[in-house]
Length: 459
Image 1 (cartoon, one colour):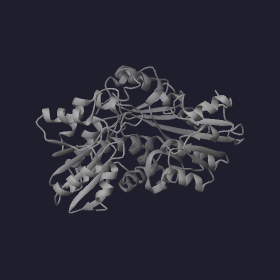
Image 2 (image 1 turned 120 degrees about the vertical axis):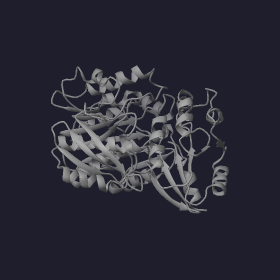
Image 3 (image 1 turned 180 degrees about the vertical axis):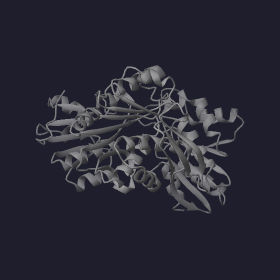
Image 4 (image 1 turned 135 degrees about the vertical axis):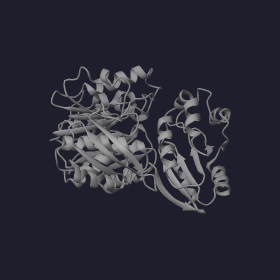
C-alpha cells in the first residue's frame, strides 16, 4: 500500500471530491500544504468551499482530467473499475488509496485519534463530542458526516493532537483505521448489499474493536446483544454504557420538556452522579450523549464543561432539523433511513408539540427497502399520516422488483392509510392542501427528500 509522508506534501487527486467525507479529507490536506485536485458530478457548497481554498475541481469525470503529474489518486467504494478516471489511473500507473485507507494514514499523525462507529447515531455523537472538545478548548481536528453549523461545515482543522472522525462499517472501510479510542454505539442489520447477515456485521465490528492497541480504550453500548462476545478478547480498556445498572454508565429519571428534549440523571459505576439536559429531542439522544460523556470523562473533561456543551448542542443538518413553518404547520427534516432510526425519530416527535404527525418518507436503496419492508411499514405506522415518494436509488439499479408502491401495500396491510406520489411536485401540492395549523410534518430519508420541505417554505 502506498504510504504518504505528511512532511512532504504531494499532489493528490480525489475521484468524487464533493462527498461529505472526501471533501473533508481534502480540506485537511489543503491545510497541510498538499496540492489537491479532483472531480465530481456537479458543483456544490462543499466543492465551492474547496475551490476557495485552492483546490482544482473538474465537473464531470473523464480520463483527460488525470495526468502523470498526479502523485496519488483517492477514491471511494462507489467508484467502479469502469469509471473513466479509474481507467486513467490504471493506464498512467498512478498509486491509489481508498478513502478509508487515506483516513487511516491520517489518523496515525495524531496522538489521540478517536473513531465513532455504529449502525446509527454516528454523526450526532461525533458532533456532541465536537461540541464538548471545542468548549473545553481542546482545539481538535474534526471530520463529521454531516454539516455542523458551529464549525461552518463538516470539517475543522485544529492544532492539537486530537482527531475525531466517524467510522463507517460499509465495505469494512473502518478496518483501515488506526484509532486510540473507539466508540461502538449499536450494531444492527444494514448494508446487506455488502454484508451477508447480522453475524457478518458483528464480526466486522469485532475486528474494528480489535484494532485498538493495549493502551487504547473501547466505549461500547452494553445493550448490544451479547456485547461480551465483542469485548472478551480485547487487550484494551473497555467502558460500557447502556440502559441498566449493569453498565458503567446508565441514565435514571429521563424527563422531557415541552419540545421533547430530555433531561436525565447519569449514574456511574464509580459512584459519581450528575444531571444533564439536552437541547435535541428523543430518548435515543440520551444514549448518544452518554457515549460522549464517557469519552469526556476519559479525557479528563469536567462535568461542568460537558453539561454546558451538551446543553448548547443544537444538532446537525438533517437530524430532526427545524426547517420552518408554512400555513401554520411545522416542517422538520430528518436523515432517518433505517427502521430503527425511523422509530427513534417518530418517538421523539411524539413529545414535540403537534396536532397531526405527518411523515413524508423517501426509501433509500432497493436493497434496504426489500430487506426491511415489514419493519419499515411498522415503524412508519407510528405517524398519523404517511406519504411515500419514489425510492432513492443511490448506488443501486432497480433489479429487485421493489418499489414504494410495494411498501405502500405493506403499510395498508397493517390497516394504516398511506399515500404515494411519483413526483415531489404532486407531493407538495397534496401536503399544502391537507396539512393544517399545528400539524407537524417530517420529511425523512437519506436522499433528496429534504427538498420537499424547502420547496413548501417557498410557496
